[in-house]
Structures are given as C-alpha cells and as structure tokens.
Length: 185
Image 1 (cartoon, rainbow, N blue to C red):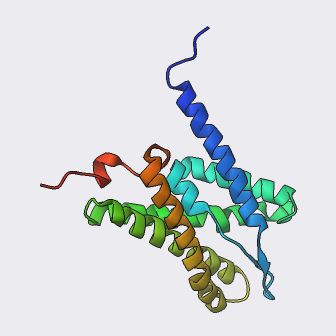
Image 2 (cartoon, rainbow, N blue to C red; image 1 turned 90 degrees about the horizontal axis):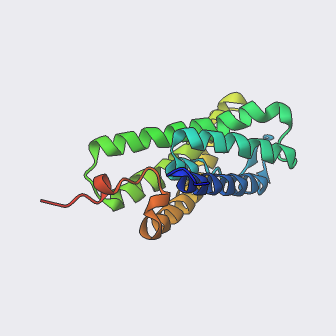
C-alpha cells in the first residue's frame, strides 16, 4: 500500500493548522474585561492568514471560536459574532493589506514583514475593535483601545512571521520566494 504523492505534506500542513487553531483558542482565553462588556484579547487572525491563506485561516478561526466557546470564553449563541469580529474581518483587513503591498511595493522581505505582517496585524486589531464598538457602546473608545492593542498584535505577529520567514519560509503560505526574494537588476 502506497501513500499518494503530496499527502504527507498536506497532512503536515493540516497538523500545523490544528495546532495553530488550538493556540489561537488559548490566546482568546487570555483576556481582560472592560466595563463596556467586551473582553480584550490578541486575535491571531493575521498570523493564521499569513501562515495558511484566507480559506484555511477562516476555517481555523471558526474552529478556534468553537473551541473558545466550549471552554467558556463566549456563549455558543455568540459564535457567529465572535467569528466575524475576531476572524473574518481581521482576515479581510490583512488580505487587503497584502494585496495592496504586493501590487504597489517593491519586492523586499522587509517590506513583507513590516507592511504586511506588522501593519496588517495592527490594522486588523483596530478594525476588529471598531466593529465591536459599532455594535455596542460607540466606536471612539474602541479605536483608542485598538491603537494600544494593535501595537501588541502587530509586534507579536511581526516577530513570529520574521522568525518563520528566516527559518521556515515554507510554513508561511503568503511569502512567495519568487516575489519577495527577487534578484535585483
């Protein structure tokens, strides 16, 4: 009996996605409460997008939201909202930043790390908290909190992506060697 070609790599990628999903669910469990009724926590959505691409990241974030709800982080009724605000919107923001940087910026790994990973993650946190604010007590306090939390999210994501780009580039689905490491003329 032989294993189909490509299956081991796909299996390894699935294992990495499941491990990352569990880590994101754990990250969502470490939160601080606000008087406005929202718990602040790191998102990890930008990291999942950069590592696995949008479709797998959205599936992983849905699983993370379910796992966080089952562990007592959010009620099951709030699952769609948690996935939208903490998953889909941040992934859409990072995807938009990635597309914009890919189209306009020169091919340089530092551009990828600083603009896509660092800035994209920070903007995704701001967008997530602005969405929470729009649904609740007003946007202004959430944008201010988003700026503070956004820096932490950006630093964490930028640092991890930098390490992975240096040591395990093949794990970062959005980092294309041909694009970001293009030889200069």
